[in-house]
Length: 149
Length: 149
Image 1 (tube, rainbow over the protein chains, first blue to last red):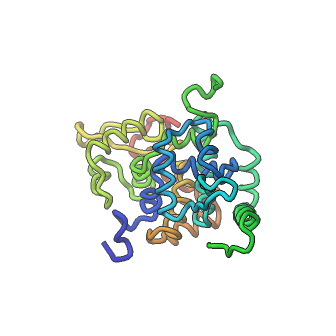
Image 2: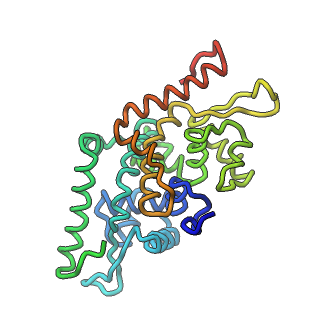
Image 3: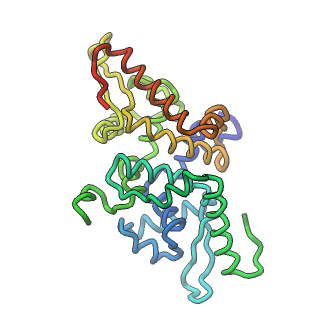
C-alpha cells in the first residue's frame, strides 16, 4: 500500500469511488440535488423512495465529509441548511446517466429519454451545461461570495 | 405505483439500478469478472480489497438472481463453479468506466489511462469488443451450448 492510497483498500479507482459511494442512498441524494432541484432536508425526504431520517442525516454527513456536497445556513430560516453539489459532486453525472440507461434497459425503471439523448449527443456539452447551472445557482444565491470549487 | 414497477420503490431508473447494485462489493465482483479475468470463487477472494467469504457468497447469489452473473459447474473440478457475466452484466461497463474516471480524478485511485482512452475514443466499439470477448470465452468453454443471452 503506497502513501497515496493510505485511505483506501486498494489502488483501484473503481474501488476508491465505491468506498465513498457504495450505498444506494448516497447516489440517490446526489440524483435529487442534480436532477430534481432538491436543496433542503425536506426536499430529500419527499423523494418517492422514502429515505429514513437517520439514513438521510448520516449520508449527508458522509457526502459533506467527502467533499461531494456542501451546505450553508438558509438566510430565510436560520435553523435549516441549504445543500448543493460541489464540482466533485456534479462530476458524478456520467455515473448517474449510465446507471439510468442500465436501470431502464435491464430493470424496470422508466427511461429518461430526453436526458439520455442530450448525454449521448454530446457528453462534454452536457457536463458543461450542468456545471454551469449548478454554479449559477450558487452565485445567484450568495452574491459576492467566491466560488469555492 | 404501477404494475410495471411493482418490484421497485419508484419508477426512477437510477433507483432501479441501485436497488440491484447498491453495494460496493457487487460492483467489485462485476469489475473482477470484466477486467481482471476472475472466474472462480478463489479468484474473487484473491482481490486486493479482501472480500469476506460470507459477503462474497451472498453477493454472488444476488448477482445470479438478478441475471447479471451466471455460473456452471467446472468440468475439471465438479465441486466448484465457474462464473461469468451475462449481457446484462457486461452492459455495466459504462457505469464502471465512469466510476473509474471519477475515482481517479477525485479520490486517490490510480488512473487506468489505457482503458479510459479506449472508452472515450469510441464507447460503442469498446462495448462491442467487450461483449464479443465475453461471449467468445463462453463459446470456447462450452462448445455446442447455445448462448443464453
